[in-house]
Length: 389
Image 1 (cartoon, rainbow, N blue to C red):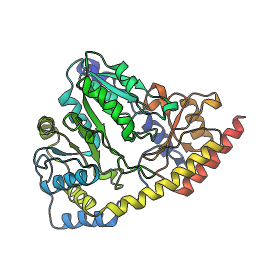
Image 2: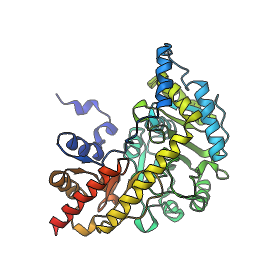
Image 3: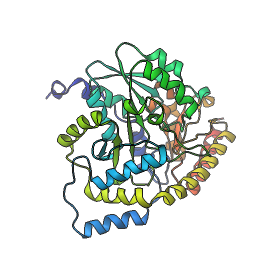
Image 4: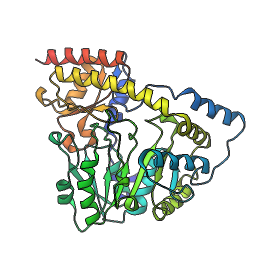
């Protein structure tokens, strides 16, 4: 039976994730060190788990409001006020979702019309392009450059805008590169964004995982940007809560309202027990963030120094928990390098091409793993490179 006739164009053209390919290979092998998935190796902090257990024991398992529990929405608003001096109304300007990816999907499906263009700086997380296509939009990639530390520039943005451009996806701190946009970089971009009247979908899932003495700056906090920005965030990376599937969007009520209607029909509401856990995380999780961030920082310095010594040069990432080293010196493509490394040395990493065409010649390595695993992986990569020569 030919099922293709039953599928729309978006569904027919979606490619499988390049990240999962090497993760699946690793799962079928013994003695593999997998640095392929962006999942913290920490347990969810005990006080967060305990809160969820208590809620479960008390039978708090019913549906919540479609937007999410009001107590959780209030805590999200307090978080953005404290961290970024951004004021949102919990009743109308917050939507709690099943992970950050659902929030991205809801936003794109509500703001993008058929044939409208969405600018996507690459390399970037794998969901933006397919979700844009499923919404009927046209993804327009901007290939950011290593010499700019993979930051989006105002000139690059200006040159990509056409009369069909509707929105910009803004993926910083960046997965896979670890790039961060500082205030001085944002100021130049916002002039272009406002000039062309664009909507911005700012994916800030790694906002609390930046290094050094300059914290993350939300693009929504710059003058003229709050009213045109949908901020996406969540709990997976910051609090090591990947399996809890908790995300959210904050934006003007005129944007949150249609997203909530779509969420109501597609999802109903986010998991109730997870919402209780998220409230506890926001109220009492600052020390957990600081502890995990310090650990990631040590791992970051270890992996960057180790890779540069091996000749796989990479700039020092300032956010998230990934490095994006160049493997061009080996003469192999990204796919070839990753395949040979996993089969020869049982180390799983991800080809840069999984995150866009400009990722060719690079690989992504997650350092959300222990010092022991990272050190052993570096030893195996060193042996692999020696044998290549």
